[in-house]
Length: 472
Image 1: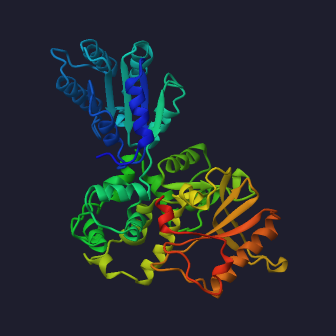
Image 2: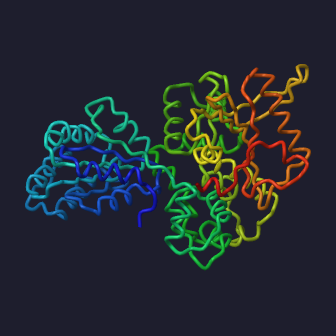
């Protein structure tokens, strides 16, 4: 059963029914459900489907491609010596078909592009010189090595430049889609439990597929991550090596960001990873951002050069906090409930979930139709000028002259604002107005799972956003 993905399903339906040939690229991080989306949306109506062979040489890739050609009905052909000849064989298969719409699905495309194989040149020739001139072909390419997909297909500056009919960037599930998914599997969890699970796994459907009914959430987490031979025990290493052909620098960047809650500038990351200042480093950051591992944000009223990169991938944050040095206790998570280390992580993980659901927050505020931009902001202490020093993780700056200053507070019950909370919020507001001279109205907005308890300071909050709002 295909959950969500309505926009993506609509695109694939339209290109299937089109009366001219179409070329579609689907990309996104590993385990997000790209292949499943394509198969389910098109009911596996493929004239030809082939998946690249991980780690293979050119001879291996061509052998597997020939095996797929035979599987889909091509008979009596000589083994190709290169990709140009291989695509000629694919043309023969297409010519022999009486199908009205000839769907060609090439999965894990980057694995076919071995060193010196001229695969991209052959693909360009197949599409530009032959398939695009027909009216009956739907070519869909897909890959988990997002860096390769971006550089070789999405942003190709050669023969495939501007040739794509559509590019589909498949994102992780939202909280609501995760709720729909577990309901489809008859797993009983309330929304707070779904939220806590999302704080660990993010919206990656593959990770959620390991949940089993009849177990509590802590038992499931122990079984999936901490038990002997746990199914996701080695997921971190597999994830980055599958996404990036040379993952070492990417992991260095991620590791540095895992230590900095507020994020780091490009210059700080260069220093932390001991890398030379080059365009290649910028490309690596862009690729990590495209995969959804980090977010890049500008600070309010600061130029692009002051942009900050912040680790936002839920699973990666969980890994560095609890799995990098895996505990020997197979029931670790069940035994850590309400422990200080877990509570500290909950606060950070909840903030990240909120940052992934800003559209839902805007809907809760009733400003979905108002032009707005999101920023973070920070300033250093300057006692001589009455500046305390502040960090604001999320500000929604609206065209209607209002700024929602968002505070994210994780709690397992209604949140009670203390005198310390009230003072901290007032200091942040004062610092922000003093440093920026902003003339917008400031609306203090509290995002907390169960809302705010009545108390002396609750009236100072203009807007409250709850877990239910994040599920909208």
